[in-house]
Amino acid sequence: MRLLPFRALTTQLLGAGLLLALSLPACTDKGTTFTPGPVTPPTPPAPVANEDARSYADYTDLVWSDEFDAGTLDATKWKYDLGGGGWGNNELETYTNSTDNVFLSGGNLTIKAIRSGTGSFTSGRILTKSKKDFVFGRIDVRAQVPKGKGVWPAIWMLGSDIDQNNWPKCGEIDIMELRGSKPRELLTTMHFQNAQGVHGQQGTTVTQPAELSDGFHVYSAVRSKDQTRFYVDGQQYYTFGTGGASPNPFNNPFFVVLNVAIGGDFDGNPDTSTIFPQQMQVDYVRYYQYK
Image (cartoon, rainbow, N blue to C red):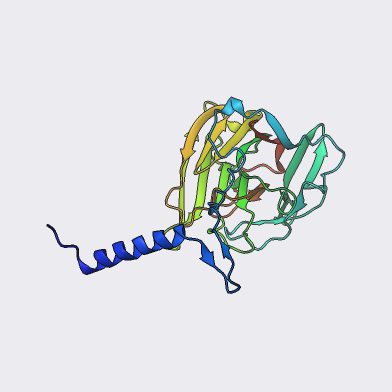
């Protein structure tokens, strides 16, 4: 016969006593008895809407959109980022809320970068921060982008908790960026904090058959739990998991940003070949979920 170690024997005896105690009625200080009722297990958290990945075409329920058909930018959906100072990338432009830089016409949003007679630049940057957050689902942006050395159009997203968790911990999803000097190259990048507590990034560069500035294209991000997939004109070209993000911010709410930057670290500064003004036109921004 194998002898049980003292700890195991004690555990067995205590367990037997506990079972006996649970099976007997309890006595109150008033001499009455009661029998403990069944223990209700905790309710598991409800699944988040659209957290499972589905095919691109399954996202048919239009939840939110802006078709840019009104006369002015819808202030219930968008706000402006304003100012200059390089924006962390040594950019040259100053963002304004002037209708010279951001306006609606012909069913499109136009974000126009303008060079003044003194060589300074103004442009526009709008965002849905504090207006609309997006979690799982599909974001479509139909846009025609500009080109030219030092011109930097972008369709992207930032974590909605950026005021509590500074970049890059909040996460950044660059759906579409373009170096104006390389107008056939579509760049998609995910920015995050890694396990070492510093900036990490993963992404891809895809060369297109023609210059993206030649016409409108639909740039899409499909977000599900622990996965983001990217498409151009309905064709998938990149999938991102968690990429070593620590913590992973990409299951959290994000807001949309649209802008045209000028100069800086991404594509360098404009040169004599760059023609101004340059503009990005956006036909719509749409957010779909599946039913």
